[in-house]
Image 1 (spheres, rainbow, N blue to C red):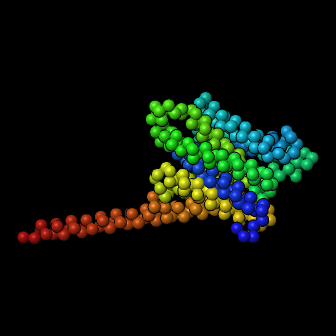
Image 2: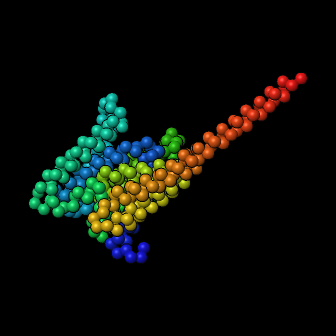
Length: 307
């Protein structure tokens, strides 16, 4: 921590909070099999960001984040409408919304950049992320929002566990499935909205999904998976933030995703539940047992054949 400026420390703290919140919400998306949904909503947030800037004519993070939230929620509603009103499958609907909304966002961004002063708006940072370009008030807003997400997840842990693994029993206890789905969607949109300026709309889905998938290689317990995913996400955010401060203009998002990818690679190889090394050792042990049984069977057969 020694040698980092005050602004760098704020970036580090913000990315730590964002990564932790993303890891927790990413676990919900993993168990609901909504990995592509997070990607679709992240891309769907871009038109709202640009629209928020265009309405005011200057950069105001709260207004732009509200626009991003509205745009992402509109994308979620569009996915639901396509899925329920047609024969299109959910993953196909998500792919359609992802492409359409991102294309709309790029078009609006090109228009705004040609306006007087639009080239200096810094909206391009929302594509790949640039935490170092954020002012201290922006980072405080993002850290506070991430803290609220963390608090909501931790306080309602039992409800989430019931809703994800036994929705019928949860409904019998009076826990509304629609309410929990709405809360899940709200948390997902909240994390995406507060993270897109730092990580970018293209890479935000990776910060949501990679920590959860990595944690799955280490445990079968939901609570432990939540803790590991939060730790992996927070660690990736902190490492990516530190690395991005070493160079002038280095984007934060790619380094965070690369740090998360490193965690995933270690988990893939050495995870005790589904890691490749553990599975190879298990197969080797099974082959050894089969060979031992075969040898014993052959000896018994030879013994019975003797006069």
